[in-house]
Structures are given as structure tokens and as C-alpha cells.
Image 1 (tube, rainbow over the protein chains, first blue to last red):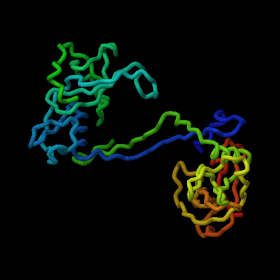
Image 2: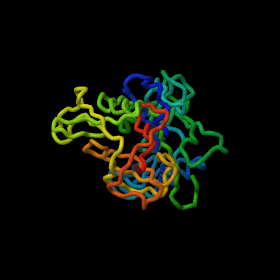
Image 3: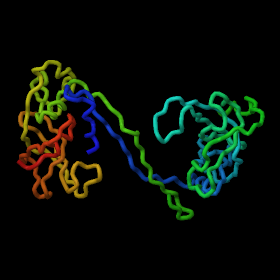
Image 4: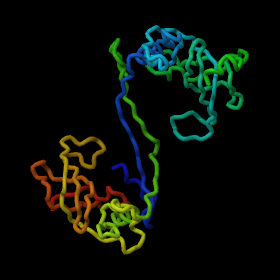
Length: 172
Length: 154
């Protein structure tokens, strides 16, 4: 059983520690809105959805507007570029699956969107990442695309001037 | 993730902390686990005289701390009695046995509470409330509840 490879924890003295492996396997249904979004991602498209009342564009879409409680059925294709609204430099390695540290997690507000997407920032030193940075998606090779936002490997600086704070201050 | 066009996409996810995590067990549960490693079953006596197995750090009735003195720990078992049980027809990959078995609450001799463990009884018909059982110990023990492989009819 999985709890057993732990002799080194306690050796011959009193037992003071135990290993607690945790693993959860589950099937998840993406739902209608996210399925449409992920089918778009599989073709290299970023499809948001617009609220018919307030015109906010949700990215990724959840199928309804949380402010007005109405379905968001109008689909809006957004460009694969946007603005970093906020970010975090990760300096602690915690998983073989994560990138080599330091790396940068960021919220990227696509042009035309009213909610920000999570993504990694690359192509520049971590210390130079900043709010307002203009970025574009770096896509994985097309033959690797699947129904996963991981099709975008990371976001890289476009070289444009930083966005004015006023342009994204309502999205932080 | 498959795509039956127009339907909800379904994906198989795995959530896992790489390598798992370690936790401290505290002195009371630690005493119990140390006993298991030595092939001994140990309970803890509350101020009211009830014997809790597996031991708890607090009396569930009065919230008083228990197990603070060495003499609070008392040997129990190794045999016990099944107080309730549920039959598992199709064991899952992480279950302790790879054949049908029962999850059982077992009140060890000298204890006043039930301890959950697997009962290897062969068939559902062989299990009944009140039956006598005994632990089947692993040869190699490390101080974990799985040092008891399962219980079996006594």
C-alpha cells in the first residue's frame, strides 16, 4: 500500500510522522460554454462571450454574466494579445511539472475582454515583468494543439509601449 | 479529452501532490502507531475509564485531554468483535485487498470504541455483526495503520 515506503521517517524511535499520499482521479465535464471555448482553442481561436445587458466580454466564458444573471450567447473572437494586469514571480520550485524558477504567472487582459486570463510570461527576465506590459501568445506547434489552453505555451512581450494604468485599472 | 461535436467535453483529471506530504502524528496517535510497529494494539483510557481505540487526544464526551500519562495507554486485543460492516464487491485500485472484502468497525477486546479496518472474510455470507476477528499482521511493519494487513475471522 502507498503508505509504506516511510521507514526513513521514524527509524527505530517512537513513531512521530507519517506519509499521507493524496491522489484524486476524476472526470470533469467542461460544460457548454467552456466546451465552446476549448473547441475554439483547439483551432487557435480565443472565443469570449458577451453579456447582452452590460456588454462585458468574459474570457474564458462561463456561459452567463455573474452581474446580470443572463446567458452570454453572443460569441466574440478576441486577439491573442493583451495587457498584464498583475503578476507573481515564483521563486520556489514545488513540482517537476512547473517551469524552472524563477518564472512569472500573470493575469493577461486580452484586448476587448473584460476578464483576465491566467498565463505564464516568458521571453524576458522575470524582474522586468511589470503591470501594463503588452504581451502576445506564443502558441505551441499546431500539431500539438488540443482542447486545452496549454496550446498557448506562454505570453511574450510585443515590444509595444506599456498600456496606461487607466486602461486596465478596473480589471485588477 | 474526446469530442462528440456539440456535446460537453469530458476530461480525465488527476490531482496529486508530487511525493505526497508528511505529517506529524502527535504523541497519542504516535504511541498507537509505535505499538503497531511492535505488533501490539494500544488504546488510551479516558478519565471516565473508557478505552478509545484508535486513541484520540481528547475524550469525545468531556473534551478532557487524554493520554498525557504513560499509564493512560493500555493494551487491547488482539482479537475483537465486528460491530458493523459494509461489503465491498468490487475493490478499487487503492483498497487494501484486491478481492471482495468488508469494511468493518471492530471493537477490540478491552476497548469501548470501534476501529475501522478491512476484513478478509472470503464471502459476504461469512460476515456478521458480532463475529470474532483477529488482525493479520504484515511481516514488515513501519508504524502505520497498514501494518495490519487486514482482519480475518478468528
